Image (tube, rainbow, N blue to C red; front, side, top):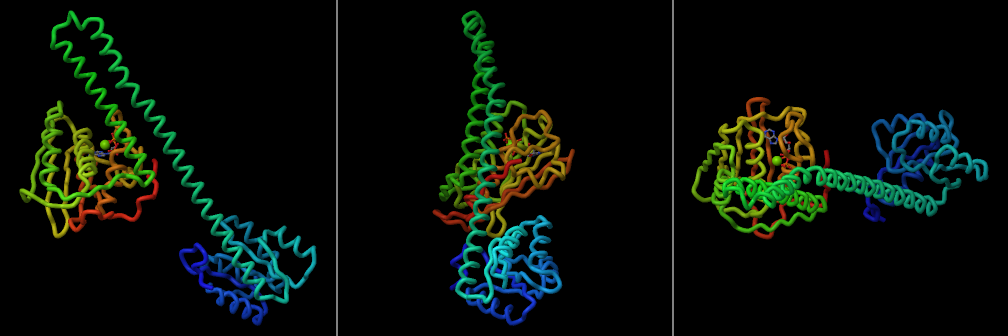
Length: 390
Ligand code: ATP
Ligand code: MG
């Protein structure tokens, strides 16, 4: 039998502990017959020492040994408190009392001597299966916990972040209802603009939340098509410059007029828009922001450089976690989803995002897209891993 009967990434490792070399020989032979790896120790103490360097998937231990017997070994193992592999106690005492004692000190199961190979192999197989099932259950529970944390964060954020734009809509709307007919057109316009901006803010929030939900379920739509990266990026920059009312100074450059690539246009737009809106949001009004697109070897490099507040070192490793915001973001608006979604979108393209930053001087985000993607490619295998939350 081979080990691929079991859901272990590597060949299972079995630790055989017995003071009698001929029994160890039998244990090794039977375990190797099953396709497992085997390491040996001649008493409980040596086995405990071995556990400092080896991580067996199951332990076969003789109950009676001179230096430290199987019962004491089992007790010590459990007292250490780390995750303990299943232990099969081998005893020559076929009595109720020794079985009782084996379970009392934490053995998972026991067999009696003389060893019957078929029973031994069957029991070990079962122990390994149970261990794998327990691990699987633990990782499912962990994932469930992460999902429920993400859900409650989303509910918190939605109820909090929607309140301000909603009250803007309600307030401006009630003023327009009451005074709209008597106000001059430009005064009404101010309120219509406020309502539109608040609606756009809520819509952007809903888009982010929908995307983060899709990303988390590994269902972020990835539909790569052949497109011109220069045109796409340039259009985004022009649009953001037009929409900005704080007088942002966005400088666009590219080392070519056209760059054909395969990418998902919607996700590409999301990545560049978020990097650029961050640069605008986290920089002083009117300070220059450079956006460039260059081609190096078989990669397209989009860099967004600002002279803003910068990102503290301790925040950098967590910026791609959903809802994590820099400690210096203060009251600047945002919920910490943009980079998490941008990162997941880059993963789907097989690309990456790098950060260079100095607090108080500015930040450069660099998104590197591989140019060897073909239509229909799914660049990343890791589509189902959950988004980490801060
Ligand atoms: P949103 O979900 O609306 O994008 P956000 O901008 O806070 O909210 P992210 O885009 O994910 O979220 O960015 C995460 C954090 O990274 C920000 O809160 C901010 O602290 C930091 N950050 C990102 N870009 C910059 C930048 N260019 N300069 C300084 N800090 C930045
Ligand atoms: Mg952002």
